[in-house]
Length: 154
Length: 154
DNA sequence: ATGAGTTTGGTGAAAGATATAACAATTGTT
DNA sequence: AACAATTGTTATATCTTTCACCAAACTCAT
Image (tube, rainbow over all chains, first blue to last red; front, side):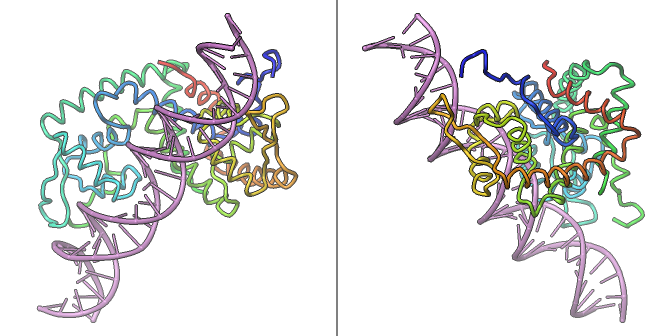
């Protein structure tokens, strides 16, 4: 096909996709995950692991399943996540006080420092991404909207 | 732990996560994908396959790589996708007119009907999900913001 | 107290997506 | 003609998600 006939990305008709929140959400999130990777690559944590740390940091002593439920993933997925974070000495399993089946999760001292550093980086890139929004009020509005969409049931 | 002390999901402090667009986008998108699955389970198509159909439907004759680029995935991922859609007789590969390396993708007649039906369903559930937005103007606003976030670079 | 049913962390397997590298055939460029 | 780039494809590795299952531990009704 000659160059003057070749369709560029702009020429493509996205049809219904342009009006679908599901598709737009996916594209936006893909971009966020990619940028997260660029920023936190050397730290060795994924968005998922970061989320686990954020929960444990603010809610010390939670069990694995409690963290899984809070984040909306399967219990079994937590095992590998906590294994990895524990091997990096970022958090630790302690036997739960009143339930011998479960572990209570706590940040280590190094973990707290590590997470503070990670938050710094992620906040920085979040703010950079948010620059394409018009105001801080708009960001809050967007966060609120996403919250509602995340919990909407059919 | 006695029931009256047990932390429910509402009691958990999400910390920085509550302010991060990346996390909120992920949760919202997870919900959309789950609902898509509920609605389109029997049709045997995923959000990704639906997107391929939407592009081919509006841009007949596109090559596999062109579709992949439009959707932001790798061209190697298109092989399995097109294989599946072709085996379901929804679309077909035709030898490209002027490039013997590539195939041009077209909807079949059944495929067009199939896709129209799928669009009906997806539109229905999209509208249902969008009911937690206050107005149609707000939805457009949200779509516009997501578009910007999807293309923002650091 | 005891037995039924549930919950917890953990394992393993299956399924899915995603990324990369390589390949032959073909096309474009010089 | 020689060299580089592109297309569809395969293979590979990795990652995530999901499900069923297990033993240990816990809850609760009786």
